[in-house]
Image (cartoon, rainbow, N blue to C red; front, side, top):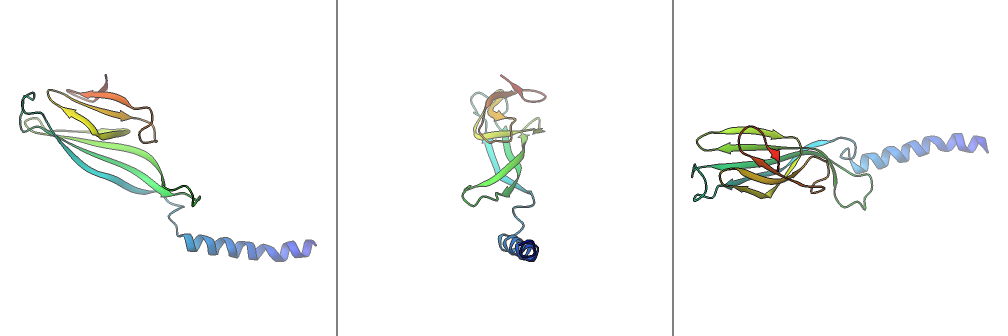
Length: 136
């Protein structure tokens, strides 16, 4: 009996290596990804600078799940680049995600954002006037 277990062990290793090679290395390593850039224009009647715009780029890391029924990739490490254009250009890296469809700009910019690694979970409204974004 013990001899059969020892003899079957290399077969198990071979099967695991075969499955791993068929599935690729996408389950093993995190790769950089992005949701792309969205440019938000300010309301020209309310803004001090009519040429003002805010570019929002959400970056994160992702990898495929080991569970084939999961349906999406695993994501972590959200960071959002907020790039203000106009008379006073500025750049800020927000540690977390920003829902780009929620960004509104006039005299200040406000947006829906969160700090957790799950996109859209426990959002908070932020306002960006001068310096760095702060919760409202």
